[in-house]
Length: 464
Image (cartoon, rainbow, N blue to C red; front, side):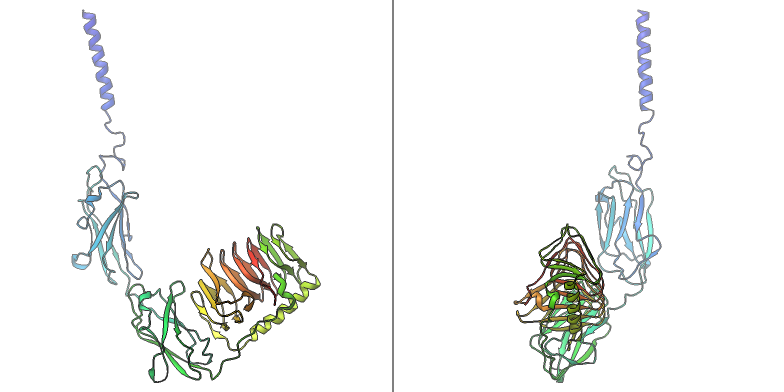
């Protein structure tokens, strides 16, 4: 009997030791951020403590916590923003559980040159009900008043004369992103003699910051017009022009004769013609000839394919280069070039001659609207670049316009951005690059440099 009692005592002692060992560390994660017994902390904030913002002072104030928080405890009472004298800033508070981040969004843009104090109080609790051990306080200062938007460029240029009334582009380019609702027929006006307003429509392309006034009818010849951008035009932060912007131009007594299609001669059958090399990557397809002269290298066909013939430094390529030079010079000499904006995306142009003194970009859709007999000649002083990305740059022909009647005379080189869609014959003085997946309904003809392709479709228009 005594042996049995002693055995029971030892068993109870053993169980007691096991219990003590098991309970000796009630939570092996104690002190770690996710531990139920560890109070939450603020691990990072924005704006940074002591920082100064940049214009336009649209601060979004955030605090990231060390652990999951109880969203119900994150309110405008526990997450506050105050200005001088402790004046509360109205705003809303939200919480992102995925990142443990609380956000205070001011209802209105913060005033300039003011120091603000953000506070997370001890009323904020984690998902276990533990509160911050102390308020988290930080400060930041807003920037000086934002500068007003300005007009950086106009067409026609201020004081221009002999402006063709049928192709004049009345545009204004802004220094800031503008609020499109403030760019309208009231804030962008065109007036003739006696301050008589010209009837027209106003459009704005956000990607290029360009506003365009399109007259309903052709402008009168030999007449001075005044264009005005009023202080009603505001940027996206609600800041208006400091003063009206005004410029004038005078239309010509008569426009130059409409351009005619440029004869391309032996170059007409070429989809690709280079001066030094032709290089292709991927399964490009050219529905025409591919050639080079005075260079001789044509690489990448295959995998590229063509429906015509390869001409490597032969007499046909040499003749085509000579005819290209003739067409290039004729395009450069075409009279009456209407001034273009730096980027012509979002515009609709009638047949005519257009001129960019330096570079030219196309972001968005450029629409060339005219009949099958209409001809467009673009004179570009240096480089042509289209925006990259599928659908980010397209040249669209409407009204029966034909790609064979569109000519691009490029003073240096042309680059078609990846995935862009282009129309017309590119005649570049140096080189042409077709980005991956770019489609060309026309020709890529380079006088002295290389033509580079990368998985492109080049569709050559029929020769007349």
